[in-house]
Image (cartoon, rainbow, N blue to C red; front, side, top):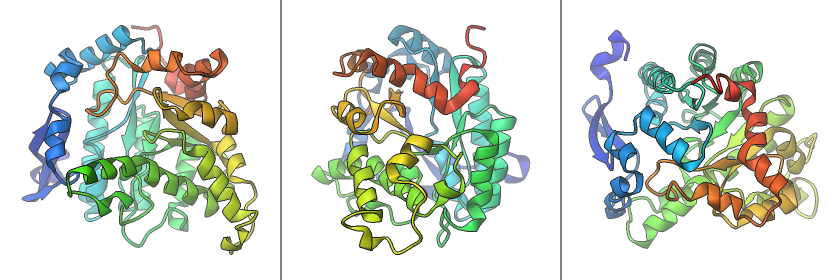
Length: 360
């Protein structure tokens, strides 16, 4: 943290499985989400699952060792603890932005140990659009981020409002995708999953199932139907950690609401393209290698915009030796597998993904 903010820096108060950290800020316990009995259970098997990576507190060296072991050439790493700054910035823009900068500086240093193999997605503040644009430029141009995760805007602010045009302009100018990341990337409050948060038992499973897909579905709809993608036709979205099997249904549903039997719901100027066309032109979605919906998505939407996700090293991820074999066993063509495992990610992230490959 920068000196003027250091006395107010977040302090780790609780840790689960060396993965989830909850923080204290200004003496207040800042929970990432409500703690239930399932929280402890979810993180109980981390050492058995991840071995040296867990024991080394997820060092870059251990990550490279696992990448070599499991057949992963390059990883694009998403933030987890870094989101605390984005959340804080909605209440205290300056402090939150400082936390975000500190996280992104750390992420640059971490990936700097193997810059050809490990890339990072930066965090940006959530409280002020100007701060978002500033940190987007800094994290990409000076630190080497390959994307940034747009954060939930402050109360009363919306992504389609003119103040956020500077953010979409920054992403277009930098030629990096904006990442949508479930509960950290909501169009606004309340979150869909809060209905069941903290109730425990079967409600924990409902909460977890809702968490990422439904918020990402809302985010995609917001970018398409409010005209953001019309106004910024070179803006790219990456839709992460939410499966891909729901995509055909959702694009069809959105299309019906804009043009067709349910078009009475769209009381605005016509869109310049259909949801299918927006997705094909500007969106990419990450699949989980074991989900049955990949074949369905390819049949109805195509295979040019689906990318591969290991979810490493989350507690609820597949065992790390499973994703590549699971993808190779999918009932899809070899060409589709090649696109999902490599080609589409190169198109999504561009030359930054390939920088330095083969130098270490």
